[in-house]
Image (cartoon, rainbow, N blue to C red; front, top):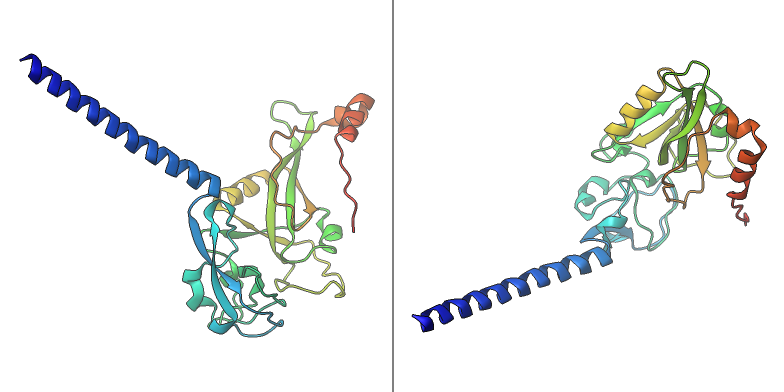
Length: 257
């Protein structure tokens, strides 16, 4: 009887140890996956330099992988190769550059359709009116922007606040222009800016502009950071010297090359 109980205890210990090893292996694998940035995803990359307006061929493209945590919605997946073959580029592309949907002028089958530039699962939403004409003169499709909301705070008739609503949104179009333009081209001059958003972000923008004012802030095209925990701004931040000084101390000015 005692021998039988010892055998059961031994088997239970072995099973527990085996389960522990399995769980440890799963944890290590998950940890390594997180360190790498997630599972690799195959993307289309340029094999060679391609001039603006050239139709894409399979010989111009090569498949490379990128961790899924570093993906952007505008990057073209390798599985979308049939959709981009024969499509003309809207800008000049360099070798080793990841192909983006915004690099493509139109689709092969529907050359006039703007909707074909919208990645699956995303939406395009235009923000119009206000003081956007001045900044849109400096803006081009492919730029990135933040959106600020200014409105009266609920429960307070007198208190108006400004807060960061959305950050790091891609500009799909400025006015009716959705092709990339050279820096030497004259300003587009439109107060309509079309942004690439999720359906949730589109709902947020629609609700915000009902009784508020939206402002667009242009950011560096390579700056993809999201600033968390930004406070709302009210009249006291503008009028009180100490609060103004606190904001000024947080300012970091980068040299423009």
